[in-house]
Image (cartoon, rainbow, N blue to C red; front, side, top):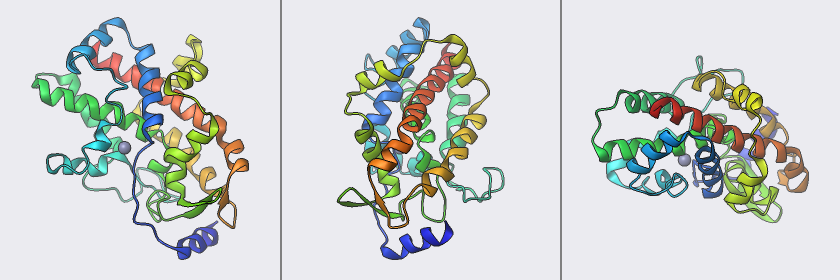
Length: 257
Ligand SMILES: [Zn+2]
């Protein structure tokens, strides 16, 4: 595996860093969360977001990345842990990462006493970041910048592994709108939901971290990706989006109950 990555690294480097599920993934996560939050939570969120939906703002955090006022949030979209290490043992970004900042934002929102604008910003961050934390390449290896430096061919298009996971895979797995995604993957089984949302953010982070190696290992030696990869990871994509949505709803109900 190490040789494979090195080989792919030598093919070429990419300067493209997207650091996000594409808009579709974030929309699905926000839509599923909005279907599970309590009425009380929904009413509070509606007020904070000035009547806009969580889906409306699910990718807002990507859009503001270039603005000077939000420069400090750049590293909040991801965390990188090399194989053999854990979140606790890996060198971490001193600017904060998607896990540490998610936990900090939850605490700040729970404490309350925020201005309307501040609370609106933090909620919009949270909606996006819980999605990012459930995208395997957002918690990918540090040595290749979460797959950004793993050059691959997606059918006939040169791209990188990060980009495959951000948008190409999700668009290939099903040709659904975000609403159709939610209709098809959402669940109502209370036992299953409570098992998915049991634990805390650290456990959910480690759940995703435990799935990262397979996403790398399944990249063929020649870097040519297509139907076999789609077939191998269809259930993973569905699982990640579902559990991110359910866990986001749990977080929001905890804050606004
Ligand atoms: Zn992001």
